[in-house]
Amino acid sequence: MLCTVSRDLSALEKANSTITDDDATITSHDNEERSIEKKQIEIKEWMEKIGKELTEIRIILVGDDEKDVDEERASKLANAALENNLLRSIASVVIYLPLESSKNAAHIFANLMNRKVEGDTFAAQIISEGGYALDALAKAYGENDQVALACGTMLKEAARHEIINIFILRAAFFWRFLTVHVHNKDFGIAADAFDLLRQLLTLHPHLAAKFFS
Image 1: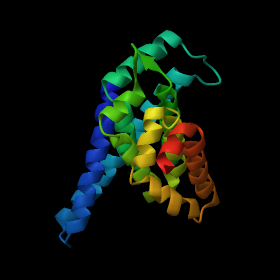
Image 2: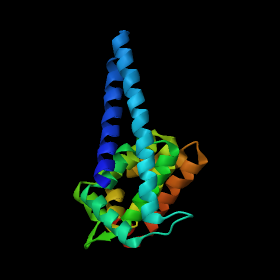
Image 3: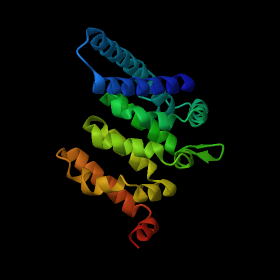
Image 4: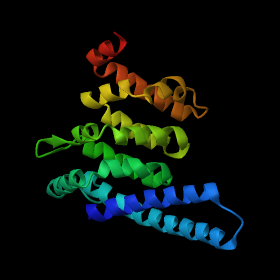
């Protein structure tokens, strides 16, 4: 299941990247316009498929009103998520997701961040890759207001881990939260950005002390 989801997420990222490149070079030729329309239809189909997959994963991990969590099944899914680098895939495409899918993605991300898989953690995996997932979430936060709150949820959950907290404090994107996002014209996003900053600077006081020293 996770292999399929990861492939679908990668396909969505590639499709959006391709259509963006085409938009930059598009001419008036009918065949090129049809090509763009075809890709847009394909992206819509990927969105619908991924939306269903994310809902299914969220239910396995956190349950719903009708079903409690089967911890054995959830643990197996978490193991597969680590093996397939699901958090990186989610972070890569969240900027393209519709609102409800981004909310499901945030639930999944937050749940997995708090799980250990045979002694390993998703926080360690993120840092081992140079924080790519964090950079992608921060990029989406600044470029798509529709998914900003979902990205904020994921960043805040990740920042509970010391190794990620200090990474964010040292990241270039940290300053955009401090100087740009807290002034977003959408009050909800501005408040969320402030809450992330508050967490980064107070949850692990010794890290903040080192940051300011």
